[in-house]
Structures are given as structure tokens and as C-alpha cells.
Length: 119
Image (tube, rainbow, N blue to C red; front, top):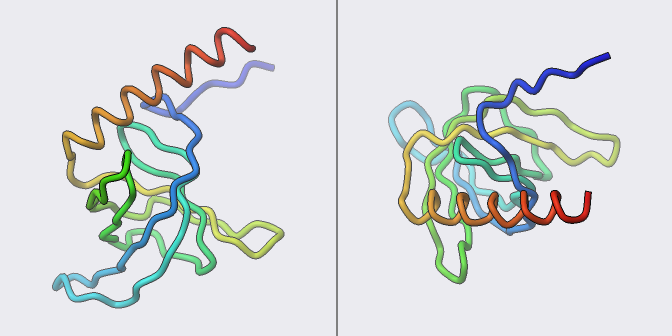
């Protein structure tokens, strides 16, 4: 059986703490929480949180990228809760930031080289 990759962008595993604020349609904050980025690609993040998020929620995320706090705006694409009670959520970037793009490109290149060398 062949598995077809549906992802548009290659992903790299990371472990970066982050904070996020859910905002309503008017841009007003609804809730503020913490989480952890566990995967990143040029198109978005896969995060782990203690509270589930709803598809289409818009988040203002702040993540530490190489010692600098970088703001990101994203939309929840999917969310599921695992057996431990933690929620795993796919976030699509709504705005691109040059710092993020440079970081992701470098990280994916390093991650791909590691996988190639170590299987």
C-alpha cells in the first residue's frame, strides 16, 4: 500500500514554547494561553496545548525564534485531543514574516540532511 503525501510543505520537528491569544472577528482577545510548537513548515505550525481550539479560530502567536520573540498570525485548520488530554492543533500562517521563513528554511534543510544521513 502506497501512502500519498498530501502536505504542501516539508515539516521539521521542533520544541519551542509559545504563547497565543485567540481573537474574535473584531480583533478583540478572547483567551490567552501557552503551548508548545512541535512541528513547523513554511505554511504553518503544529502545536500542543492543554485547551482545545476550534477550527477557524484566529490566533496571535508569539514564539521564540533563535532568542527573539516573533509574532505570528494564524488560523486553526484542525484540532484533536490525544489520550493524555492534550490537544494537537494545525495552524496555517495567515501572514508571512521574513524571520520565520528564514528560520523554517534553515531548520528544514538541517532536518532533511539529518534524516538523509541517519535514515
